[in-house]
Length: 328
Ligand SMILES: *Cc1c(COP(=O)(O)O)cnc(C)c1O
Image 1: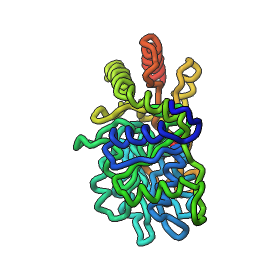
Image 2: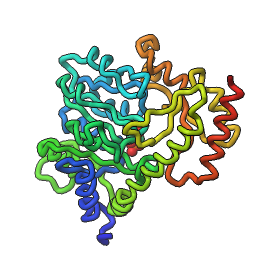
Image 3: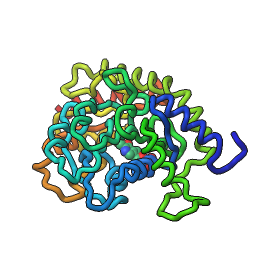
Image 4: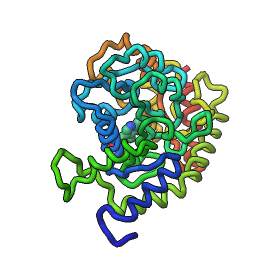
């Protein structure tokens, strides 16, 4: 460590390494993924009067970041097969006021953003759940949007406790983001943000980033085990191709709530894909989000993380198979 407790050389080194890893020109470390998303929006000039499109099937952190800017959040539906934002839905919601489209790669499965790039507005790739994943063309997730953001929260692919990063290949956008973060000792005043990462966190991030490939290998091995154990069950398993399994989200083809209750009772940490879809929080008509509604109701995730022990993964699979049999 550099001996400096605040933002110093270690943070700069972590930024360099992450940018090299995701193949962008540069990166700016922050204290959360939400902060990185807020800064990304501001760097793109998003403000009151503008609109920002995002999927309904995502955590409220994304909605929060847009609301910090006072722009209008516009909620899009998702695809039933990969749980990612729907191109068809987004293309219907674009207006002259659309200033950005936030595309999260949900649960570790990158969505093909090429068609979205043709729509016009800048794309923010939300890679909070997809650090280390690759697009079908082999490019790293986070290398194709105008800006990408990452989270290093405790449950994410690598962790610094709390933490985040913004990455871009546009020097102009990187400069604007850094200007917003560098609030001290400036000649002229404007509102800037104390979103900095500490050297302590960056040190942790650097060592975690070096272990990421191993973490992902382990996640894929557990997913392959689940895939094999569950192949004859009447459920839809997550996509294999390009998936790094930040979460293992299964579609049970009936209401997931009783499955989740029984799994939790059996000591398995089963969860909804998201706590509640954004359109429900905002009181928007459920009929406008048919795929999100269906997927929210019929999916659940079961534990998948590098430290999961062999015995534990077997218990998870046995319990899930047993409950699925009883729910038939
Ligand atoms: C976790 C997450 C965020 C927010 O990151 P924090 O570090 O928790 O602020 C944003 N988007 C997605 C898709 C996430 O999973």
